[in-house]
Length: 246
Image (cartoon, rainbow, N blue to C red; front, side, top):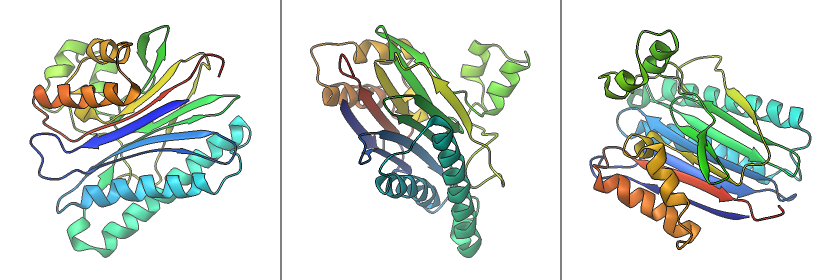
């Protein structure tokens, strides 16, 4: 496996409210996660950090995540615990009222690949050098697209395109969408909307397919291109490439 992750404040925001991690447990099983925080007085930074730090610590304690149903249960239980902790923190700290976070996560073992998400951070797979989005955004405009009230093109330009319908710290209990993904994927990409709002899927795909660059160079190029195009939000990316035969 090759892995690399990176987070960047972007060009407009004065601090970074994203958190990102790639970790491997004792059985060489991988957890990738990106969280995009929200809330004033750096509360979003606290929310996203709570999510990523909890997942990272719990994953590191595992010898193995076990069978697929165990992984699903672990994800759902972990996310509910994180949600409770974010709400508890907000209730205890006045300047953290309204804080929350998106979350996109992937679990890769020798037997299965699972994605999960809450909010509008995205999960993709690379298959035969083509980028495919796995997750579905929990946004107002995506809901309107699904009901036929907006087209895909209208949604991209909608003034309320970033309004979330679901996020950690906002709904209790919370609900994580989980996707069982084909194991033939050659790559896993997770990112915050600071990337996808600046670059199209085709532009991201083109960078990832450049054989001249290392995995680190590809991710740094994506961040640089996002900033050149405006860098209006924090940018976070986690990327894993499976070697032939893995």
